[in-house]
Length: 378
Length: 75
Image (tube, rainbow over all chains, first blue to last red; front, side):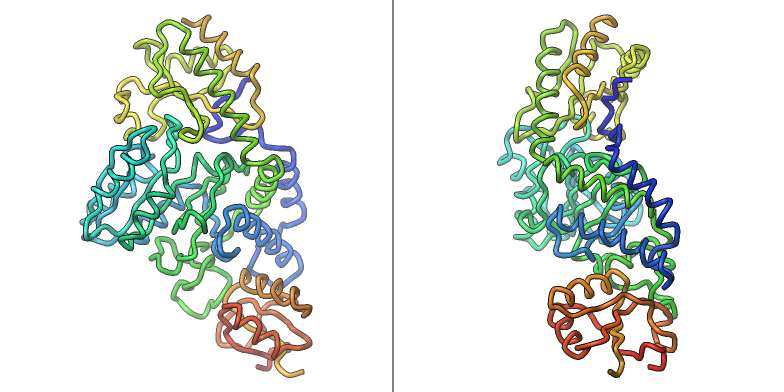
């Protein structure tokens, strides 16, 4: 199989990740952070190593700023529902995933409002100005994807963060498609909340994600429970990461995530980005030479895109094309990609689109095979 | 040495505290908080030597400290 659905989750995982998961299951079988016996402490040490690795990777203030979650959606829910109250207003981009839009929709039932900002691909000044125009006196949060999971369009989140801070408004950045592909510096970018998928560009197992923030104590919780600390109190601990980590953690997954972060560090974010962008640009150029192919953006180039490319074949349903590609052994994702807002922006709500996303392991032969398969199909 | 256990709010802070103290050449070990403390359960760092100095270093590093205890649980 030629796997080009890496925007959903990366495959294959590096051998280091597979070994780390196996090792954790074998050697860290006790519940981390709950007991005082040796295996429990050893398991907790492994989790702490992953916290430290993640904090270093994103230049967060310290390992205590890293809370492990199930995925990026989980982390976004923590921020959105933990911060916004009835009467509050949020600003989001027009490219947001349902991981942002559905929590907001839920909060709208209790009096939260939100403005969806139109972005301008390739014109960051216009995009930032659009965000500025959307701010209100009661705006309490900006939530912005770092890069669209459908169109690969990268948003100027550093500038949007700076804009928000002028008005005292924090920003949560959805890094689902950017972590491991774009450099992300929490301190330099002055990001308040990073919501990260562990199983995509960081090559960890599915079921891993992170909320990274120095401000976790300010968030109301949406899940409470045992943390292994201060058990006599029925109040949820105020400090990160315990505040956001009730219940037993995904020990093996977190061990795998650490190995994934190390893999990305060793290979280099810039190296991975350049490699994947070269594949996407090659695909774009070949597709643009083919009849009946619909492309929706300009040719992906740095720094305005991440390596995600979506297209259609005439008016044929995107699911049909993906299904036919599957019969040729090519795995891509069609439909709306859980991001109807992004499809609405491009006018593809009805047809959806066929999405291609390479990984660090993808080759130009994989892309050529996709193109050959497409030529046979159409 | 009296009360060599420094109580902190979580195992994450215990491990961070240990690493900070190691960088100062102070040996420290993460252990379960002794019974009889008010927190119910949690983690502490056992600092067999230079405990007062360690406590000061951690406070200056911004670690929230919850107190001191004897290692045998008789706080």
